[in-house]
Length: 154
Image 1 (cartoon, rainbow, N blue to C red):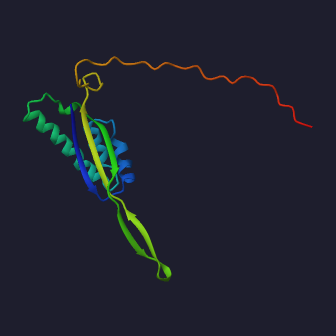
Image 2 (cartoon, helix red, strand yellow):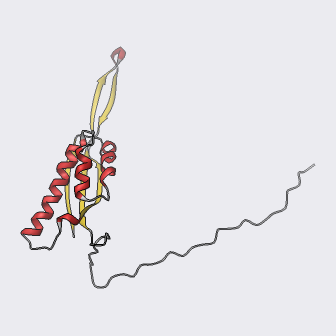
Image 3 (cartoon, rainbow, N blue to C red):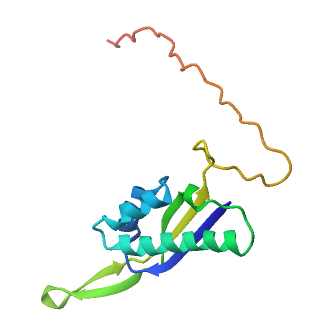
């Protein structure tokens, strides 16, 4: 089961938000909270609130809807920051000119999932049967044919 939360129109550039999100991807929720608490980036506080919201969503579904969810086994499955609309602004420049710049906005999405007891992700089956894992065939590297040296024209 996946539990998600998202924040939209956050006044931070998506590139800066991705720096913080990369720190918590794949980590357990408790470990991610500690990481965010000691991160010095301004967006870390917003991501911490978003993580708490996703955790509250999981807690709500566990209590109200009767789902069997262990909060201690949750981990950050996906954390992405997408572009929002950009605000176009103008800054005064020398000799009566104007420089244009853009203020960037981010949409951040956080998805939590439950890990099994032995550390692997719990799979949810959509549809009927589970698909068997497909092994990729290894190809032999292409070998160039040894050609003769070209003789220079006289």
